[in-house]
Length: 99
Image (cartoon, rainbow, N blue to C red; front, top):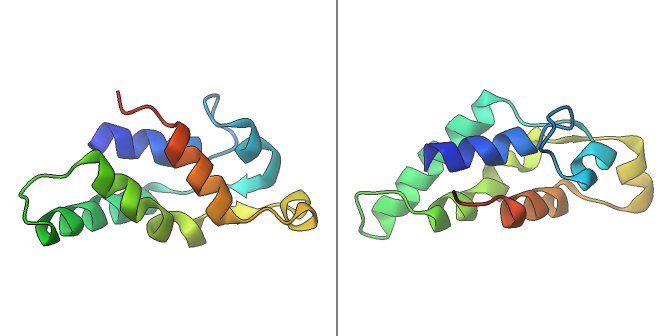
């Protein structure tokens, strides 16, 4: 799960080679390691609330938006075209492979 969360956070940074084209175009700055910490902690809490002692991929996906929403800084082009950080994060999470 940790590697999956790391891949999600890395793909929010426009300077990484595996970042989606939308991130490279619209994001000025991506998430930092603190975003990863937020995802991991939130996923652990969600797993416990679901009655499990382990973290599932769905837990990571469920908390990624809330953990990263305010950590992505958008560029002018995103504002001009009405692209939100929520949309970019959703695209990153849905296109990041689990393995």
